Image 1: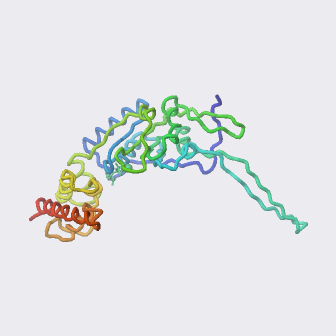
Image 2: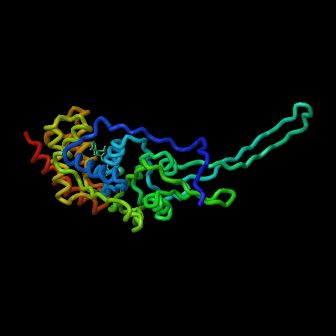
Image 3: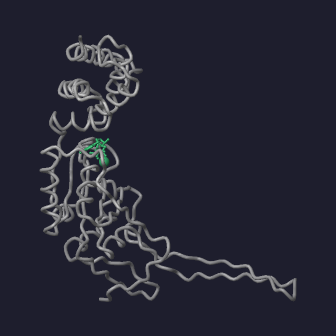
Length: 314
Ligand SMILES: Nc1ncnc2c1ncn2[C@@H]1O[C@H](COP(=O)(O)OP(=O)(O)OP(=O)(O)O)[C@@H](O)[C@H]1O
Ligand SMILES: [Mg+2]
């Protein structure tokens, strides 16, 4: 087995220097999740945050990655990915026109197809000992992700055969760490993670944060005073609990309602029609214009008005 010494060519991916974001909210429950993940990563095991949309997986993955104080390489899973999109490949083709200075009629074309190896993000992370954040990794086909099996277990990255037909392996840097995220509920465009890969990851299941954390995040991401942000969060949480939605309302809905209302200087009141309209737009039916959808829209509207009246009557 040859151990790789391929030259890293221009065009290789650049790592992000991820600093903890200033509006990241760290309540005790977020801190507990962070510490749990760091304990696994420090012991050399990859971590996988799994949970429905809007539960804070990507934000938490980047936050945990920042704690490791190494450059971060971010990959977003994609159905079109092949192994070479993760690992790299041979690229390069040169084309040159030569005009003879003395004999003007002589024109020469030169083509040069010397192939140069260009690292893709997984290879860079393994070579340099960076932290890999592989967001929504189940959107990529299992065949593309197979290359990760040996990276995570044998700490070896198999590189495709060179022109000379020689397979090479890259020894994974000891500081390489990997954090994965996935959403098992996503209805379309995801693949089942193959058992062999799942078995190598420590999966931490994320659910919607508890009320205090949702309020703290909404305040941090909207600049709305806590007392008013609490009302928006309570409306969203009750609506979520009611089951009367088309699409489950997440933290993003809390942030959207609070940020727009705060920017517009609206009072959080059932008597403020613009606030009520924002709640309807953000939380209401996405299918209002089918006959079934209209009925559902009216039910949702009534329920939302009841909730807004309950929390926001003076
Ligand atoms: N701890 C936090 N501090 C500040 N903002 C947060 C925190 N956690 C989540 N958020 C915010 O909540 C929203 C949803 O978070 P995020 O995008 O991480 O969720 P997700 O689970 O990755 O969602 P999806 O599955 O749709 O990608 C984002 O706007 C994010 O900035
Ligand atoms: Mg995400």
